[in-house]
Length: 445
Image 1 (spheres, rainbow, N blue to C red):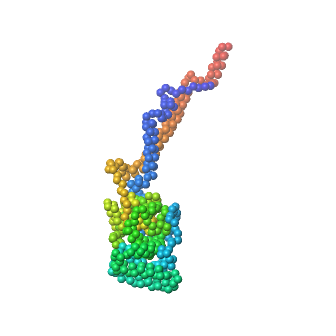
Image 2: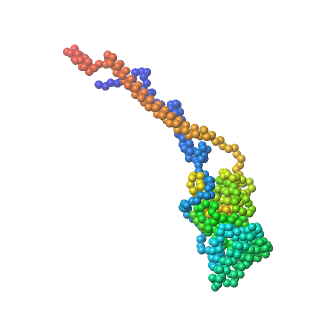
Image 3: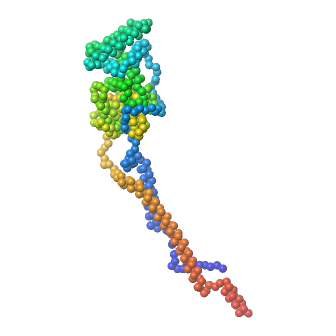
């Protein structure tokens, strides 16, 4: 037996009870959810920018580090140079290996003060400028010691040290004495200048060979090379004498570039002034620049500069941060160690320069774009995920509640229908229908 049960008029159907996803409230909720999810993606993109976190107060590690000139570093540098000058056994400067060896031995036996005095003496002789009286008195004993050493060499190497070598040394030593006393003004010949240049080249090599990489800056053994580097940059070499190098070349092959005229590029991120303790004619303080290389983010260049261009930010005694693009023509000194602000000992290329080339970027005056305040960014990053989650839960609950309400309505309709059917006299059971059928048959008989 089949029953065709229909809901009573006025009751809601399943279609009317289910949520209508095309209705305006539901579409508004879904559109708001999609928009907030898009804002979350934008927030994730902005969170990936370091400058966003810097604006929120979370500082990032800068290339400019705090400096500790007394720090030593025993670490090795893993950089490998891709290009470097040919490193070959240097040829004899004076044309006689014995004379080169003599000057090398004499230089090694000198104390730092005598080495420094010899460099000042050579500079004075080439420029025909007399030394101060206090230094002139020490030159006599210095030259006498050189003569004693040469006489000892000549007596043991009579077959090699001939008249020409003796004459050359005697003229050179006498020229040094006269230079100390100021007696060579307008009297230095081209031949004497050539002899001085030969001796200077040899001593430069010896001085720069005494430099140790990955060490602190204030090593006394490096003072002669330090003074000589300043003498060289003060002579203002021609721009074509400088070679463009990269950070990895200096970090990977420091010995190959030591004492060479180089050119580097980068952005000055920090600047400070340091007073000079030793006597350096021409200036009284160093300008120390910490430069971010254009081709590396590893560690900065540390550049000591005598003078700065007009208009360049003036340094103070404390390290101050700036951001200026520069080109540096100078002499590579060594890889120096310094104490970084992450409590690590780092190394970086140390360069000596007379000045720098500064090309400030002129930015047209425009109205700066609107930038949201920090509190708004923080509220955005925190509030958007919470609001999106709340809206998603609300949509889920609304759809789930509708399904539950629909099920409950159907159950109520079924119970009401069955209750109505139980009181309907027109609806009979099978037994009643069989009885009526039996009575109708008997009545026909």
